[in-house]
Image 1 (cartoon, rainbow, N blue to C red):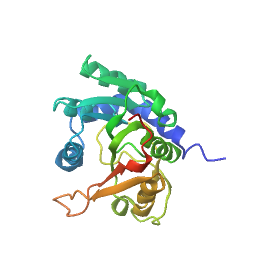
Image 2 (cartoon, helix red, strand yellow):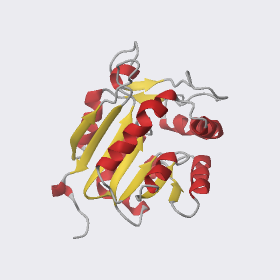
Image 3 (cartoon, rainbow, N blue to C red):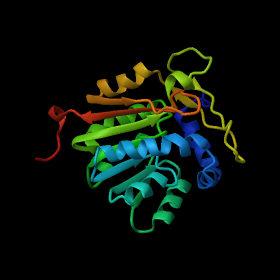
Image 4 (cartoon, rainbow, N blue to C red):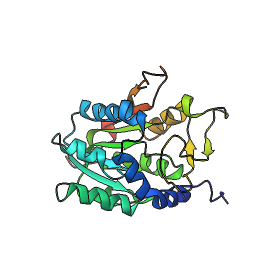
Length: 236
């Protein structure tokens, strides 16, 4: 049996325990790389696709959803943490829709519509949950729709450990807050990320590495894959 300390369930447990503190950190803009690089990187990447509507997977307290909504995009947000969803809905009022939903329960029947773009901003850190999303996303996208992911850059986040897929312990190092135990995360190599797109019949059409201007090294990895038109099973 898989060690519970390194599991998708443990990730969800940790985020439930740390939701309030995370909201404070986001409100204080206490993560420099987000403010300097990665927030703008994901916003620009979404806008480059010119979507009419977006599904924000792992939306947290809703900062990205609110930003996109302010630019005229219809956004629906989901997250497995009830406290984060409640805060996202409170801040958005009746102008946006949010739903508590674990990735394992994600399927086309969950929604009354399909989406031009599904965005996952540093929200795919599990193993089975990530693979489940990739299996389901084609049925959630509109024809020609895209899956857009921003994640830790494998070469930077690997550290001194072997460059191979596997569970890693989490850490709040560098983030000022009164956090409880950090969630573990599932490390994937660049080849492993690309394989998730190709084996789920998504055409990988963009790979970008936003650079940290201070270090000159990648701050993140941005991957965009579009739905293969030959696989669309939606209505005419």
